Image 1 (spheres, rainbow, N blue to C red):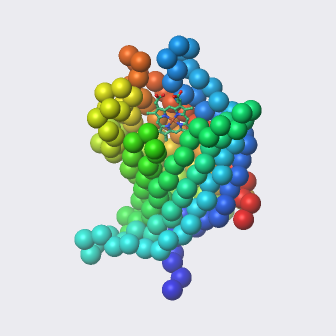
Image 2: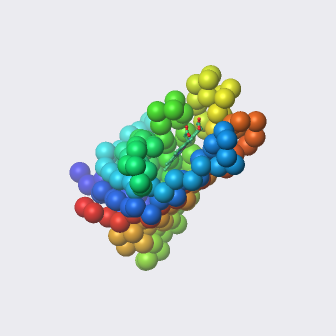
Length: 179
Ligand code: HEM
């Protein structure tokens, strides 16, 4: 059976990009800035039904980020993009090995040229360990992703309470479809 992934259809595939900029918290300097390269693999995994009422078409992703220069792995992430056709809502989830998970929802906007996905959550969509809650607490997450042809651009903001202040941890990259 053909699955209708709606606005998530264009994600499916493998993307690579080396124009990434990460602005991360740093205990000594005001911030840490990393240029990075990244691979994201999006895979359509079918539909799920919830409480016999809601149907979600789901695309699983896994991504790897390495710093340009020393090639150090600085970020690994997995999760899903999900589309609720009936309510025209998209939901994004992420899990990272700092022991933080996020679920954020929003809207897709499509036209002939591009597809945009916009999701956000406050702390109600964040699950984190007690350590992270005390020391490096994620308090909100917002992501904007736009696909135009075979180019994908995203910008995301993670607010983190760390080192005695609220820090705007941002990540941005432009990737090209490689398959
Ligand atoms: C491309 C995406 C991302 C990259 C490249 C990235 C990279 C980094 C880096 C380099 C640090 C500093 C680590 C250190 O100096 O110890 C950091 C800190 C942190 N990141 Fe990210 N990050 C990304 C996305 C995220 C997301 C989506 C979240 C959660 C929603 C997140 C949560 C955190 C937290 C809580 C910290 C503070 C931990 C600490 O510095 O001790 N990051 N990130």
